[in-house]
Image (spheres, rainbow, N blue to C red):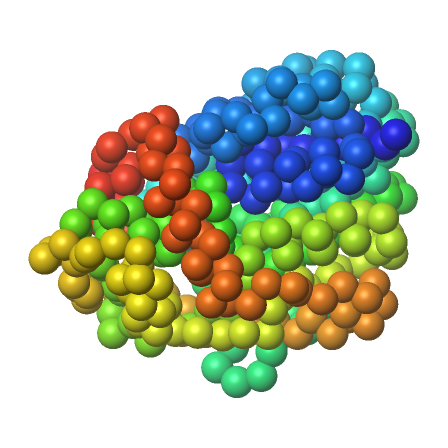
Length: 337
């Protein structure tokens, strides 16, 4: 029975990943700093599972992290922990440097210095490739990050690959498109919209709503991560995407069509265009042919089905919001002030 350490397991992707790992009979240790985006509600359904344990630890606390890793002796480490919100990185980049770069560096150093026999799966983003107006970014394309967030993830990706080449650390990097689904913090677009719909608030959209993203349901992403961990080639990059792009305004309209079938919309539930973020990339899109061909992975949940599952989950789990700070939920998209 393989043992997996997941960093950032109280967050969105991490908690969904742990649920799937437990289902697939792995033993899981969740290591999380407990930040504003962490939510114990995310793990409530499996917190007492016999193959699940939790440790509070900041990845910048190298001594404590070393004790945890050396004691647990994981067969694999899924490095999901990260500061991820672009707007917050614009408001204050420092936390992103410490969490995304130094945190990854500490994991790599612990593996290197202590000769720990484990495989590292480093989870990253399509944002490292930057704007792509036409076509789709491939694993061989150069990085062109636009935001401090994307730059911090690009840096951590390069750190991982440098340790693979220099120190022979067994590691793989994945770059995924925009995730959505249950348990996502409402600073992000879709859960923010769902919260506002449920609470009779306006629906903020940056600029003219024409920014396009490639959307993937979180369960599909997690399935891909496990597939890469089991069968991916060490030292390689794997793009994980749905091949389905949609601009933000279209996302809102589709979500409203789902919500109207479930609830009566309040009078304040209207689209509100707000000032665009600085340096806002117009379009992200990735080429996922490699993982589909080499590892025979395919996304299973289409956008509309995933969006309905997402709305239904938040509607049925409104206790999720009770563990979050009201200021983090109610303020404008991304503002940390």
